Image 1 (cartoon, rainbow, N blue to C red):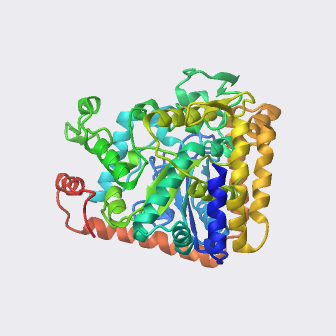
Image 2: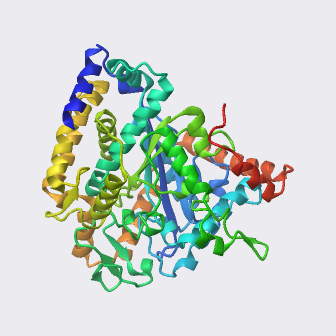
Length: 528
């Protein structure tokens, strides 16, 4: 494994060009629930001071009207992406009055599923489609899972770097084809090794009992109102969160662009008898967009997605077929409750190293047997990653201790860290690698262990811990001065987004049924 990485690192360096990764881009998407001062999910509509959730480029909503999503532009420096995310939090903290942003990934649903209002995007066709899609998620999976929050890290490698790798491997294909193939190499390896992220960074080892309606799904009781798993890292990524059983049978292939698009389209176009019983329009009310295995591509959850910038109204699979893979979206990050914005610079820098390692490692195709082992590893780490005796499954079925395997991967990441350090001519990334390596030997340093330690020391229920840190972050964000130019820009964007939604809704549009039919008539073979 590590020999292939070292060879590719040396091949790039032998070309005589240094710092080729300088032009790589990073972006962040961060979700947070708006909650009341007593930790209940907000029932208020999306604040007008934040603009239109449909049209605002940086502040929108995810599943729920109360589940805010902040989207930064792509920057070449992670510090800029984090600074923008921080500014979005500062601005929002000033707009939402007495409400606060919930600082943990797992919500506390003291009033059950009915307390989660589905996001409303107005009465335009695209707004209706977004709302009906979310109704479908409710009918299919319930609302609790949809109220979980996380952070997505978007990353694209610089074109000069990818071309240098292509040249070092004497690959003569058209660049776009090479780029897509290379990103799928990364994606397959992130499937294999991405369990490192919840192990090192997971921060959801406990949940409020209200999340399961009091049902004990193989947990232990931490306290009267809190379930937990003693060695858990990320219950968000476990079988009670995004890795739910409803999608366990989907066989989405990550072996190349064609197989990925084909397998995803198959799920989108295949009727499901159970969902057919729910229906689409019942008594004049839309319940879901269709009765297929997946309503649209975004319904399928995975650790990582291949992405291409879509044109207005374009399906994601059509965008991928037209442009190829342009970047990857990493979806394995819990909110860090110890950070006011849910993520730190150390995390983004470590992810860069891991992604470069995954890109430069040999990456054979994943068959059904290996995918089953990958899924098992992700579940094991989510529920018991800090267990010192935990063993994971290698591709060939061999069992290996998590810590032994993690050390192997860290050894292989030394070369990628060296390449990244060439961008800044210092040892920053190698220091990051060293700091995270300490967590392999001492799991008490991980956020998941720290959460439980703090709750235990303070004799706190999960909801009490979440409310306290959320309120502390809200006070910090409101006390910090917001740069006046940024404040004015965000206020202007909010006003313009409201005007844009009003213009959209004033435009003549076809009937909603015709709009949906035209949207789903797109095929991934569409050209430019």
